[in-house]
Image (tube, rainbow, N blue to C red; front, side):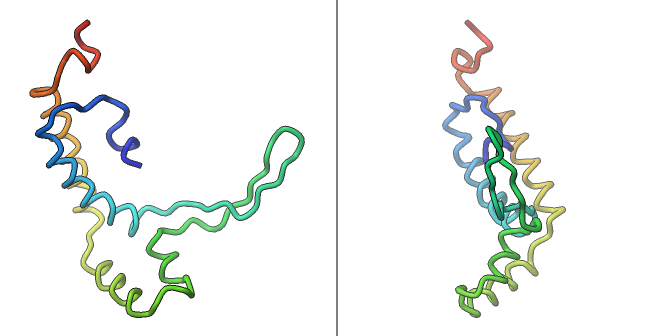
Length: 118
């Protein structure tokens, strides 16, 4: 999932590691609590192609709350965590950290490997 947010650009500046870890700390809860995804319910082969049917899109948080094998104390902890999160502020922080990562890479990174100098 991180490639979706940072792309495939080579990031070789060692100072960026601290900022990337900050990004992971915000991005993980944001994706788990607020970004729904579809799961494949059934996949049937029709000739050389597949026909897939999907479940209703849900977040990982919603799936955890509905799963019968997860203990109730874990679900209570997840509900408390979810109540403290603000998706708008998290998204702004993610965007700020991504901009900071690319600014640091541009300023301190190795230009020979970034494809700008040959």
